[in-house]
Length: 128
Image 1 (spheres, rainbow, N blue to C red):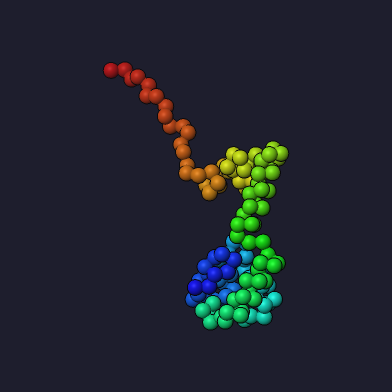
Image 2 (cartoon, rainbow, N blue to C red):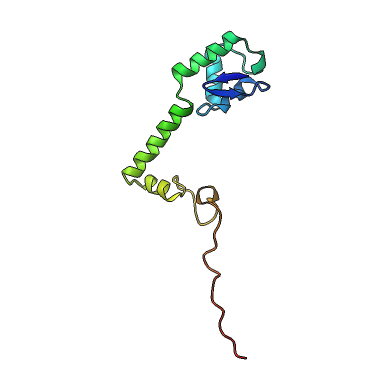
């Protein structure tokens, strides 16, 4: 079990894929970290030596903002947008897409489960 930046990364996968399990590290940063550490990206995590793991850990802590620190920065940015009542902040408050996507259809991820508004019309009394 390899722990990097407080995250247990999968040991059966290649290093370049396993590093993407850390919040803030995607495929591009993963390859950049491995290039800086002179490690083959296709090697499995279980085959890494302790020295190589230490080198990866040091590279990440020195040069990258990951996990809790990054989440705190992102949350602070969103809070700032809400506080100054910018358009993007208002969209965050309302739980709507903030980057110009359409909301007439789709946008279910941000808006949540569909609720029907109409359709509760009272029945008209019919002649008997």
